[in-house]
Length: 264
Image (cartoon, rainbow, N blue to C red; front, side, top):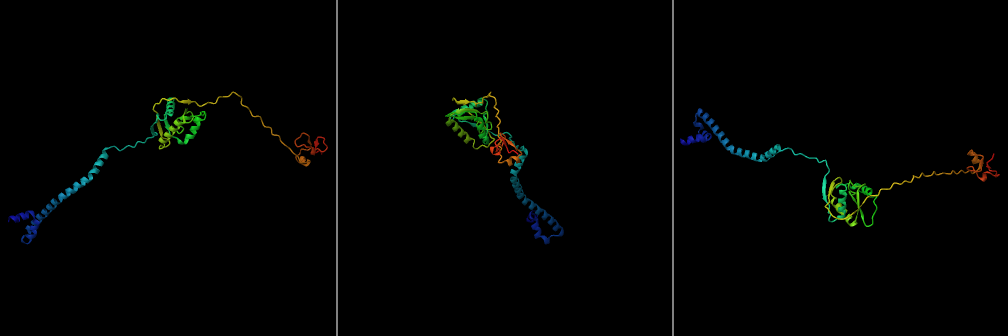
């Protein structure tokens, strides 16, 4: 009897199946309802752990996204800063290796020339011509320019100094290699450590004004040459008679030699 009671409490759906024919209709109805409740309870209890695991897994899988979303929502949007000014690169010049060129650069900057070189390779030839056109060549020396010809700041008015070729050309090669990877328009700030060496700077010659009056070229007189082959040509030209001394007069036109040719 006790086992039947436990059976009806724990597994009523099985008991209902076994004792179905022995039960009256009211007991069948009650047993059916109780079995249905028990089945629902078993299904609910059995599905709960699985559901919990699934929910926990879903939460764990979604957790990074949630964190990222939260961080994104709390953090301000990144700001892209557009730099309108040209890039400036610092370049330390090796004064110990090229002391003469270094001394010239320092002196030129001290005298007001720019320490910034805006790279402009296309204008180098024109700048060099402008800066050196009134500076005499000196035997055994190069004419060093600052700002350099390859700088947009160079050209007319650049500071010029006589520097030994070894120092000047070595410095030029060093600078060229250092700036090889930079595009035109990049601004390079030259940092030149102090060095004690004597250099000779030179100012471009200014042509002296002259007080001599401007000579007016004399007019060129073009003499017209007139030639008549015969008196017929003289008459065709409407120049008959032609007198001695007139354009086109010749002795063959004046057969009697009286000074009048092609007389009628």
